[in-house]
Image (cartoon, rainbow, N blue to C red; front, side, top):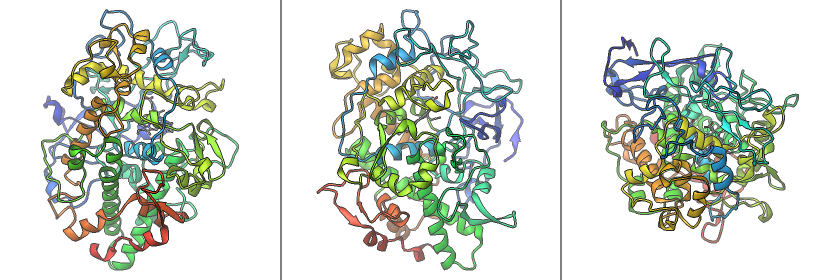
Length: 608
Ligand code: HEM
Ligand SMILES: [Ca+2]
């Protein structure tokens, strides 16, 4: 696409100039990179596209939902100065409680469990990495440091890039008073001046299009494909020793220097964060290569490119089918709305007026609900290992692929079989005290809950009560309103001075679950809106009415017959799995032999 001169087009025409810099290291840390708002031309060639573009451009004719675009909002931001400074004052004009205070006093770790498997947690993280990655600011030398060298709060904080978290003096979990927090990168104009109001950027495609497998930039996709003579990309994705993820040229992910650990390469740079996530990446790279080989056999005269795109289309369809038909019903419940949102029959009518972009509220608060389901440990057949020892240690995934996979779906002996934690205000200490502890020189960790709350304030997200109102739900009366905010509502008063100050993330997790769902009503409303938008606003949704870019009826039926259980059987050494891998095995969800499930494989001849 050609970048047109920036004039003053209406905001929905805006899209960003893409860059590679922000992808290069760590948590999207480039070298003083700036995102400048530019205006892409209207997408004239949309109707001639047969396959999705890698960066999501031209899916929507205004390029909404493409990678490197501005993150829109449901409600206007509430920055302290109206345009840029983080939300940091309460209704009474006094400072809000520190994010760490909220975490420490309002998010304990009293776990209750469900009958779901850990796969619900894992799929959540897997799918969000398809949808959203919001980069943080960088300085001329790369990473920015906001706290002093000894973990002390600096005397002056420049809030353009920094918003460190104050650790209260009575907080004995940390022996320092300042938790690192760099603000999310802001869109700037051509002169480097931050746009007002401050706007964040999503560097991956908003669609469920398997961008965490194939990348969100053409250069990324090229690096992930096997090549002949350094030039011709094949239909196969690169692997290490046939079935593991390839090695990344950048080896900065490892927390355990001087070991055999190596950083894995995938379409999303967060792949090395924990072994369960690495296992999902490995699973789908194996599935891609399995399907590509079948297509190559059947279509011996077809080009490598055609086979690659056909395979990518099938793998992306799998992501949508599993997400809408298997995962979402477990989280949202099985009511009429969720049944309609699922795509078990019929076709989806694309609506170009639906904006498929990932919403700020969704990625910065709502979909982080999954952090409450993170377990204390992962199981490896005959042992449990605490999460703090598994973060950023990719070899755990490489060497224990089948074990970790079996643990995620509960196909391990009883003592090691784990149920999913309930979605509620509780979090394990592994993420609220010990997050990435080994990366920190004085071996003290971060607190993911504080980061989530601070991130919401960084982005100027309006407080919880406004979203409750947006969703048309009854208002919260006061700090005794157990009906709206559950049995622990009174605790909120220990930290917040007004119900109008409650941060969105915290409010969503205090609401008791509704009906058959695992979550509260405002959270359900926000997730429902987002998953509606990325279904009806995706021109390439797998069961689109437009057969020229989708599938015919026979192909659709075959695709819908697939399940995550079958994909696991095809690509692992597991012998038995339950049909619904999002629930623990039980008499209602008995084990089936993988041999049998493999025999129900996709009929590839339908696609050629
Ligand atoms: C062991 C598992 C996980 C770890 C260690 C982890 C860690 C993190 C970290 C460190 C961040 C960045 C926080 C910030 O500075 O703002 C983050 C972002 C996020 N996480 Fe997780 N996470 C995990 C699992 C999950 C799960 C299960 C979900 C949802 C079901 C989830 C949803 C999100 C979302 C939506 C974001 C924001 C992404 C963006 O737009 O940039 N995470 N996570
Ligand atoms: Ca995507």
